[in-house]
Image (cartoon, rainbow, N blue to C red; front, side):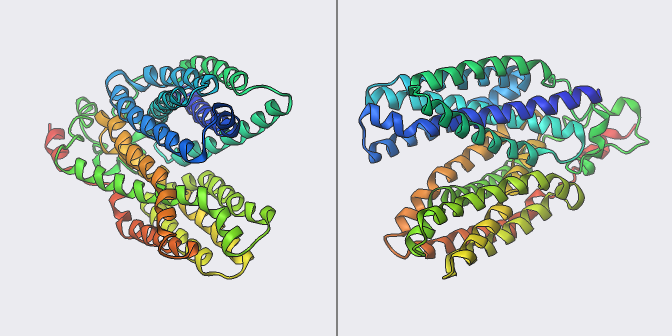
Length: 418
């Protein structure tokens, strides 16, 4: 069983890297596709909304299918769908075809995103300790691979259709090959001994001296229809706020240094670089921190650090201090989303995929809305002052971090009585 878990963890990493790579391959080709189709930046912005809408729809469908069919079935199929639809934007030569292509690619990306996260929750339960943050860190690795590959293919003169076609072919092969290592649906906390040590399930696990026949029964009582939906809604709202912060950092950090602090272009680029680097490093470390201090501490202290970082970046007149602020912002946010996704998946094993899709879906809306919200606020105030709203969102996450605390489930006691 231990070997199967190690393999499952490894192939989960493969799917996270695959998703990051496929999405990154499209991002690298955006300028070339925009020029070939002959559209303006404004039109492209509208098409990117279609990409987001498709992803949101894919998350909802993927979450429900993961619960109904199992992640072992849905994840590889979603990987194939995401890979095959990647080539469509490279083939489009008319604006309406590009819009349709991005809608379909977004759907495939969203389906893969939520199903692989649902499987990551399954792996985390089987391990009995936090491992979610490291998976999210490897998604960033996929983006780096895409940037390197895209640059190399562009240098040798490949067209977007050829580049995305090759990436799609490799993606299909990887998605189908890795499928054999995914955990079967039967691997649940009720049948996997290691999960009795899970911090998320510690309060709902049967006592050591419970009769043997009761060990398979906790999975059903965990599904409490009254408290869980409210908790999931709060997790989704927090994901919205945190990912709105991430989206704002992605699109506005460089412009902040360039336009507000008048930094050279090469220096301004470091704003996003420092943010992305500390984000990746933080996610590699967050699992150990969560295992020792708990997910509440990761979210509360991480969001507090992010609030301090973005406030420093917003108010500092010095470039070096602003860079430090962006670095702290990335480090603080790094562990927040993985903890929220993990909590959503652990809340109800029978609806893990659906709950993850709810939280991830609303979070994705925040990721898309972040740049737009900041852009709208710049009509009312200076760009750096708009970042204080992000600080407020982080403080909200600090206050609400207790939602990650495991909730005792009294009905279990009655069921475990001989």
